[in-house]
Length: 234
Image (cartoon, rainbow, N blue to C red; front, top):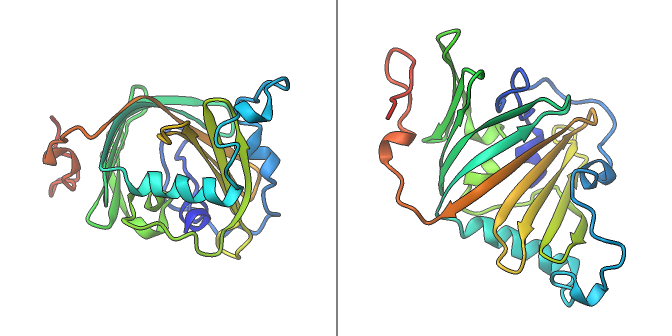
């Protein structure tokens, strides 16, 4: 369930890391325009015929976007995360579908995140603490589920550019208010970026930098923390 995945938890912790738990949301739903503002506007002069997938319906483009995520096996990339306040954090992400992901944040962030075995572990090296959360209660479920179910979400819009598309889903469910925009390159439909809007109007953008697909990833990257609470390092 796309919004359910992203909106069931805020996607930041101290504005430098993914988060995994948040209080119930009661504010008004986010408007799609708040997410579209994070996209690069297409030039007004671009003919419709030159826009990506101009001959496809919005629903067909959205279905293709979901299938593109489901078809991922492994992904490695640098990432740039921009929090609602404008704070920027950088790091490396390793993803192996279904079910495994690792985010290593660059200094000064002390955070490392590993999702494996249905649990997301968030380690804070400065505090020497590791918290854990059910994967299904976090936004990461969207990237890691073997099959993606949009649940109560509705397709709110598809923006076409010459070399990319932006697909937005929105949910107004009691526990899932908010919206998700997924950006994919065209015509190859590779995930390049996503933006998450919570019900308070905050938008978090995660941009993948030079993603590499299909590489073999070491099993050690996705091991749960050891008994002392720290992740195994390379």
